[in-house]
Amino acid sequence: MNLHPAIDALLAAHTPLPAPCERARARNTLGISLEQLAHAIGTSTSALQAWEEGLAEPDGHPRDAYAHFLLRAYTVVDYRTRTATPTPAPDATLKAALCVLCGKPATDQVAGYPQHLTATECAQTNGPVQPAPTPATRRQEPAHSIPSARRPNPPPPARTGQDPIRDAVTAAMTTHDGDPQKATAALTANAIPDAMRLLNTLRVGGRYDIVHHPALPDMLRKPSPHTPDLIWEARLNWQRPTAPRQTGPVAILDMNGAYLSALKTHLPLGQLQPTRPQPHDARRAGVHLITPPVWEHDSHLPNPLGPRAESGPLWITEPTLRLLLRLSGPRHALCEPPVIHESYTSGSTENLLEKFRTTLRDARARALDEDDAVTLDYVKALYSKFVATLGESTYNRDLRRPDWMHIIRAQAFANLWSKAYKAHTAGLTLLRVCGTDELHLQGDWRQVLPEGRDLNQVKLKDTHHVAALYPQAQPQSQVPCTHPSADKRRYEYAGGRYIGCHTCGGDLCTSCWATHLTPSDTPFEYNDDNLCPACRQTA
Image 1 (cartoon, rainbow, N blue to C red):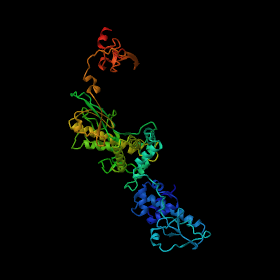
Image 2: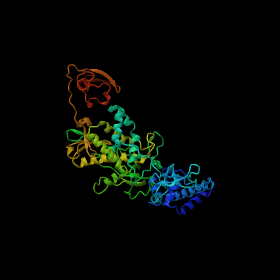
Image 3: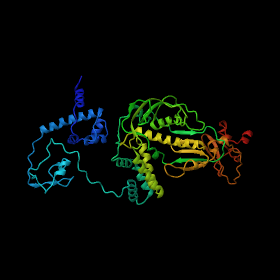
Image 4: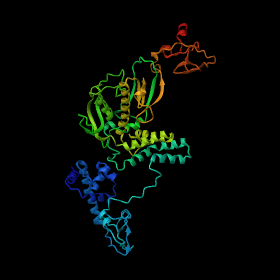
């Protein structure tokens, strides 16, 4: 049995960490980036940077892994020191170059730039320019020295403004000579990398860092590229079982920017870990294996879990679980609380993507005010493609968070259910709730749901009658086709003979060519002939 790994771990756990300023030097000497080391020891880049700056200290498993890295790093550095070729002493005959940080004389170099190695040297350097080494005896960085963690950054590229979305649209319109269709196509094609670039820009200085490629638990892994994982997103597809008594018009409403609004949800920060399922911890988010409660209101309200045919436990995401827990509380008392068997969660925040969401929201509002269709389509492509490619997608390799994808989608469905419940409690009649953004309502819905194009408003897509959803509720009388130039054309589909009316586009009796047919006139056994009741009796 090889005991070396165990011994290394024991030494790392009991080895005091070096000073914060030395930690970054050890990493930089080996040419290891923050991202590489953070991924190797299982932490975030922001946490690692805080350790190197002395703002925080590691603990637990990350501390052991970090101590082990530093121990091995100094071993490598010490080997380089013993094998390095001695360098000649500096010769003070030439003028020293100016430090790129403070503008004062500096004889050391970092990454090819003249620079002081510490902030103290920058503060203490004064007076005239000092001589620097001659070319023959120029002082070089010793092979065993560790450069400063701070490196000179190249100047940022010049920008045309402070709005990256407006800049991208302006550049696309200029490139395509003002053609809105070509500009929209080009912007949509680049929506995924643009969304990631915008997200990374807005995350600079953020309180929480993003873990881009965490290890995934089994329920979030696809068995094959064409087989979905085990997460149930609770997509709604409900229609009222019976026709309502009212005969008034039915309004089809659309929720504006459903996925954009759903970006404000509780997202797990790090890798999902098994946690105690009971009681539910509101400070964490993830996926949960539950036995759903019985839903007894399907006659007038959709099941929050959607149309699930199978019974038994299922994996759901944080928004669905929080919705079920809220509905089982004393305020609503619509169902029993779900039984939680397993939970895989991480510490969470509702504001992880808030800057990203508000930037897209403001760009969308500006585009609506300016009637800018190109920007409107571009913004929609940014957030819709961002959500769609968060999983195991080949189109976005910068961020793989299928847990976020399922959570954001489930949040959109939960938001739609909440709007439907609000309409129901206000006395409106729900007829259909489907997808992420569609409601069919009967009643004065404008008194309940504000109309408009903002994210907290709804827009009217269309209106129809109850018979469109419930044909049997209002049978139509037989009306002869009296149009003198009606085009009685024959066409075949679905295995039967049909004749269409040129005036209304409806189906006519295939025998008399004069009587309009309704769905109730063509029972299954007569579908091949499509005869009206009168012709069927004489046939």
